[in-house]
Amino acid sequence: MQPEMAASRTNKVGDLAVRISSECVAFRLRVMNRAISRIYDEALRPFGLRIAQLNTLVVVMETGGITPNELSNRMHMDASTVSRNVERMCNNGWLQLLCLEDARSHQIQITAKGKRLLKEVGPAWNKAQSDTQELIGKQVMKSVFKGAQRIDETSE
Image 1 (cartoon, rainbow, N blue to C red):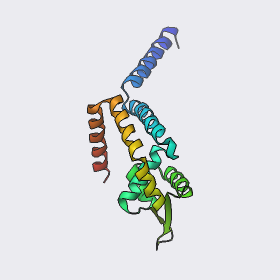
Image 2 (spheres, one colour; image 1 turned 135 degrees about the horizontal axis):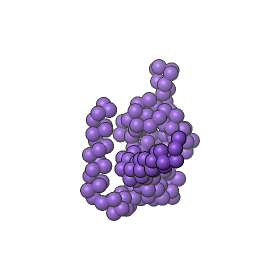
Image 3 (cartoon, helix red, strand yellow; image 1 turned 180 degrees about the vertical axis):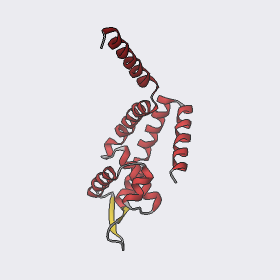
Image 4 (cartoon, helix red, strand yellow; image 1 turned 180 degrees about the horizontal axis):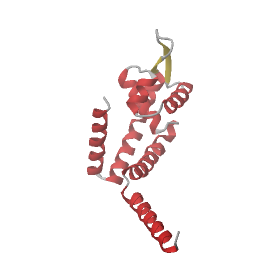
């Protein structure tokens, strides 16, 4: 390959990299997710809880009990991540696993300790919510909610 062709290809690849880093929705959402998760995780740290675990507690509480597969689908998480999170939360006494008639699965339920934890973290969660809104703005938060709602509607 001639040097000018190699330089031209390099420039095109470089231009593409710049465009992806500045325009890629997935990249930007991951950056936002990490920054926002850090806010919530910091607020929840005194309770020994991370935001993904709090979200799991909330879903289990809302449903009154859920199978791991249903939880994975509802939270848009892979089964192995759900399994690890649920195992840690059971070890902390926040969740429990109940056998179902179908021995291939079980139901995840929130414990009394998990319900108390939910109540205790309310003020910290509210602070993280406010801090997040301050960081990204009210309009962006509304757009995030709309986008999440559309995803939920299309995955039902």
